[in-house]
Amino acid sequence: MEEDIIKIKNLVKKFGDFTAVDDITFNVKKGEIFAFLGPNGAGKTTTIKMLTTLASPTSGTILINGYDPTKQQEETRESFGIVFQDPSLDDDLTAYENLDMHGMLYKVRKKDRRERIEQLLNFVELWDRRKDLVKHFSGGMKRRLEIARGFLHHPKVLFLDEPTIGLDPQTRNHIWNYLKKMNQEEGTTVFLTTHYMEEADKVCDRIAIIDHGKIVAQGTSEELKAKTNTDYLEDAFLALTGTAIREEAVKNQAMSGRARAWRR
Amino acid sequence: MIAIYTLWLRELKKYFRSKSRIIGSLGQPILFLVALGFGLGPVFQKAGQGNYIQFLVPGIISMSILFLAVFSGISVIWDRQFGFLKETLVAPVPRWQIMLGRTLGGATVAIMQGFIVFGISFLAGFKLANPMALPITLVFMALIALIFTALGTAIASVLEDMHGFQLIMNFLVMPIFFLSGALFPLTNLPKALNIIVRLNPLSYGVDGIRATLDGFSQFGLMTDFWISIIAVAILISIGSYLFSKIQV
Ligand SMILES: Nc1ncnc2c1ncn2[C@@H]1O[C@H](COP(=O)(O)OP(=O)(O)O)[C@@H](O)[C@H]1O
Ligand SMILES: [Mg+2]
Image (cartoon, rainbow over the protein chains, first blue to last red):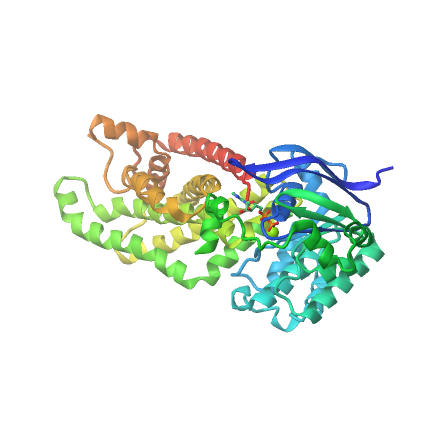
């Protein structure tokens, strides 16, 4: 009986001399909503990339739904869905086409595809704009479309990298409710990263706090508060990671061509 | 297989939506056709080589396919920068299928562009020697398109950003075009040049198209065909290997 659907052991990712993810070990149970909470540059996105076959680990082992993303890439990809932190839509296609293409890649049948796309576009209030090219959308609209796309098929594990960043509180609330429902009705395991403490507190079963590439604490929100003798998750977070403001390690980022391109 | 179709369809949609790209990429072939065709025509004729437009058109068709094909392949870099590439890289389909879909789509677009240039060449006075050979012309157009879309994809898979693009245009694509027999006959070339031309896969595509459109072939149609086929196989293999290794 598999209980842990995500198993991470001694995972390390180095970029040159810089260690972005530094020997982390954790498990996520099937059907759980699990959050990675950490300041900018902590290594959250890098971890998700390794878990989702987009980057190879320097060392350590990963099992997603029983598969090793470094060796069983296709089986791993069959097991998860993802909402990226960075944009990943095709700007030259319409909102509808973006979702339709996603559905085709994920082998959602034509009839189901139509129904679900209509339902999801209504849900994120973009149905009226379905025939508009995405390049004409505002940042918030694009974000909503990315999230709708992430919900289109029903994976065993859903990764959400800062899903609600840049969205208004109503939309955020809306999306968390949907996610909770999906988690309860379909047993989808959710792995998310967020900056919003109240969200993590309210939505998540368990939380790992990550800083400088290391997991500094993990447990339920209650456990973290008890451990740090605080009443709010935010205070627990600050007690564990310190109060210094984090800039993303600019020096390290400049080494990556992609990061350079983004900054222009 | 639906993944291949999906990515193929995407390329077509994007092509038909960008009128400026269609028209923009016609500029260069038309310029070459007019400037060289009419400019060098008399010299060519005097040298006893016949009608230059008849000779040049297969080369210009190949050129338009070459440029658009490489460009389509290179668009992997754009998708990487705008982020869409990630979406296809995590999809539950083998990455070679994603690569093949993109390549078939890019090649289809390049062939259509080749046809537009083909049509325009009649305005410049081009005459078809043998209409029955047109299906074979199409085969060679497709082979050129596939070779160079795959080449573009292979290159883009190892580049992180657009910085190398100009380098590739000037030191790879331009030489491939100029040293292919697209513009001049391959008889009596200096030895070194002759070797380069024979190592260039475009030479065989151009020769195949010329054989079917104008009836003249340097290497023989079978040689043209098999070398092109082998080049397609090699470049698609390399391209899909490199594409499957992309990390973002
Ligand atoms: N491709 C890369 N090359 C070099 N450094 C990188 C690269 N990707 C991420 N980093 C660095 O790794 C660290 C962790 O980044 P990231 O995982 O994006 O953090 P988070 O998502 O927690 O904000 C940062 O310091 C970042 O600059
Ligand atoms: Mg991040």
